[in-house]
Image (tube, rainbow, N blue to C red; front, side):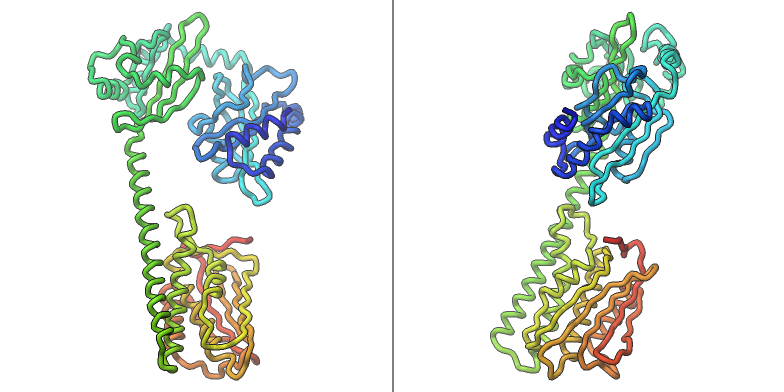
Length: 476
């Protein structure tokens, strides 16, 4: 039953794979044991499909303990506003401990949140443990203490909380059981007046002057969060039903104006679209230039010019490879490039016609994943291209086949790129356009070093450049 519930909720509300769901099912199956052993309330939460919310997919309550929750919370939506620890663990993959968290039923608990990861070390859910930190009697005392005067509006207007609420940027709006507006702080009154066109709003039915709030009030949850756009304003409305014994039910709205935030997000989205379009145009322009060069080569070239044309073509393909990798990403703002993947792409697109060789290009990442920005990736692409072209051009004279090895080594705070071959070698490396390009890019763009390492067979070139904010490495 437990496993079936987890599977049903995950399939309906999340984007988890079947393998991920199996991991959660196994954990949910043992959840009751964990709850009894630790005398804690245990939950498993999973992120909803593209959203900043989560859903409870499993729960277990310790047998014989005083209940923390009146009803089951399986299938309930979890909001970051009320459960920051859950979303911290999701984003950072780390444990979150909150010494005093407040449940939606007003009870103080000690909350621990631990990320649940799959075999790829991706966070697929969180395991939550909640333990009461005070007795039921103390919790009741806290509730009674929060109601200092006869009604909630007296508390807000007559106590020190009224002063605090006046200073808040959030809009506080309180209505009674008849939805009559009994209190609003200054920013709340301003919002109501702006959106209703009325100044005298106290003691009036809030739903009559702001009809768009019907959806908020019709929701049966005691605590819920809505985001809505009304009259060009983007608002987050947190609704809290305040239930007290022998009193009518009141509703507190905490409204946050996020219009500026949403406007900025739209601007960033437009910027992302523009950046992606620029990348497309750069790639297309490079391909157009490459096509023109190929056309010229097909129409006939002097023998002495063909080599220069092919070298130029390979340089263009190397730069184009960077933009092709960037454009495969869904996030237009993400211009990071995996250097290992870039090297593979460069090697697969190189023009080798002139050399008539059978060359094995071997790439050795050594379990390294090296990520850099698009700007540095262009420089690295050109460097790799020039080193491979240099080997193709000079290493295998009078040979029909050869091996070129491209190896990446991370040594402390530096990345080393080794390009070696089994050709004739170079006793005295000559300066050429290719080596000038390499020297300039390594020195000026990568802040690194370029040298040839002496060896008995073939040529061994080493590029060394520092790790930093623009060049990072990870173990694969």
